[in-house]
Length: 211
Image (cartoon, rainbow, N blue to C red):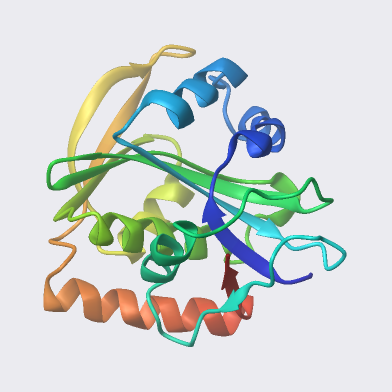
């Protein structure tokens, strides 16, 4: 696997995001929905994790030091990052959240099927949490299918708690959604746990890079 980059999703990433979306979800969003999110939804924040093509003409990536919050580096560098040149970079996964006052709602996270169970989704979740903290969120909430025990276990690893049930939430099969919420994101206990998971993730995945 080549170098890995986590950065803000751009419109040119949407075709690859849709490939992953259709693999992962029976209720897939459309291209138009993602374009509206990126262009008009001021509450929305989307990240992608991609494998860097070393022949790319984009600017050189910046190494993220071990244990450093990804969100800080992402937000500071995106302000001056140039528009990317079309490359053969492969989008491996993406995550999206809506930031409302002091709450983040994780609305989607998915990995390309061939790259699951490698720790990449966990790395992407860490980056999304860092991004939420940088934006001032105190908690993160999400819904997950009641049958998706693997995802629930991942969130529980990050100390998310099951706090409720949304009956017949998913319209494709009327499946219930489990509502989960984090502890206070800025609390010493949560940040200590996140730091441990971040270091474990970086050892497992290798260096993550951010434009």
